[in-house]
Length: 239
Image (cartoon, rainbow, N blue to C red; front, side):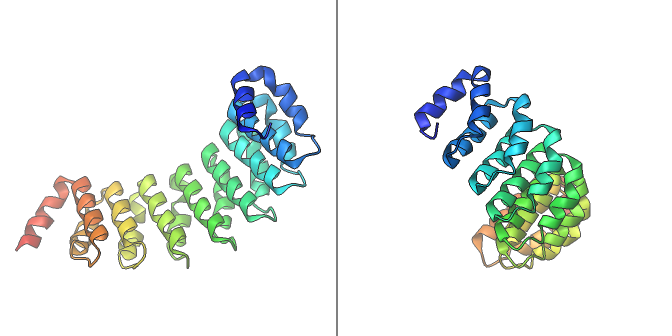
């Protein structure tokens, strides 16, 4: 099963392979159990969900991570409470995949738990938590605004992107402040363009004079996205 060619054949078999894959979750080899989780996720069989939930307790971290991934792929909400528990796993990569899975399922009950994951000791977990909250939408906005103050630039960038993806104007003042962040000001420009709120226009015009070409391009594209409401401000800036 760990062999890629074998995996492809098993996936192509689909539902008839599921009973054997469920049995493989009890195999003595960790890589076989991991592969079984992944293939079950690829097949997308909902009746496999209780067995994958059980695999979240596997002694192998790679198996627990694969079970999180499979549950996210299948997308059944019965997995949500168990994935929330996986946010407290001892291994950072399991916690990160649990964040991803919760974001993919998109159940709003995960928001307070993902917001707690924004305080995780591992920056990759915090970054994936931002991405997951961005998938869930508007209830996540206050938590993502808070993440704009994270010490890691990749987390701040992910928070900008997530806020832009959600498109809620309540994020605009915080994103305008992020235009002064030397590491993520380009991402803040992009997010403000996606939201399309006219109050950002004067600040994006200022960003057209940024020393970094990438930021100037992002500001220009954001102004184009905002469109007609930006025109009076642009004409004023010409003077």
